[in-house]
Image (tube, rainbow, N blue to C red; front, side):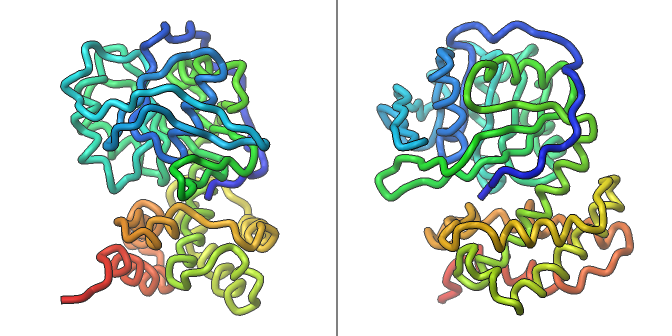
Length: 316
């Protein structure tokens, strides 16, 4: 779940780069987030090479009551890649980075920009070892895209990406320029990324209850969520994020205003029996809290439970 959020302060782009040449944009991971970006590129007239685990002849995005069909195929063998891409959108979960590594090896050249469409605040550290030489652009994804039972993706709101304000990010902005996926640079990207991390962290409570956003309307859950958000805020500030005291209350108010049936990607993974991004979304708060000597009593309970949920049924 990546609903839109109040816009962070932005600065003018650092430089202007040309739009990547046709056929030189690639996307790894055509799930909910990847399909959304691929559809935006397609409608803007920018072809994209689709790379993933499952062969498909097209992607379908449902937005504003109509379907956008992105022609395939979805390539499944990195050995079929004949040249590096100028721009790669990496849209796999943090739990799938090892599986994506062969694609990065095939697609990344000395001039490649890799835009990481993932949760968390450790994107650079995670990507640098498996994409050496690439210009890595972390991002914050602000759009609610959900995979449907028929394999299509439903986009339930506007699409927006926040990127650091630097020249590599401008390559991404130019690629999406003129599309309905807005790209904005942030002078203080650290603060924006941590604000989103707080949102993702508290959404992890849905996994432990098996409930959607409507659960935050319960007063007891709201109280727990607020305490947890304040715990996360203390760690965010220690990491250099400039976030006000009222951010936890603002985020809780947003959760309570969401449609009761709005889910989150980590809940969808739990329901499907897939590994969870518990470390990137929740474990990071506990780990960095310990590094800074900040008590994280709620994380100390939530993180082991999420880790155990990621293991599966626990039978045998």
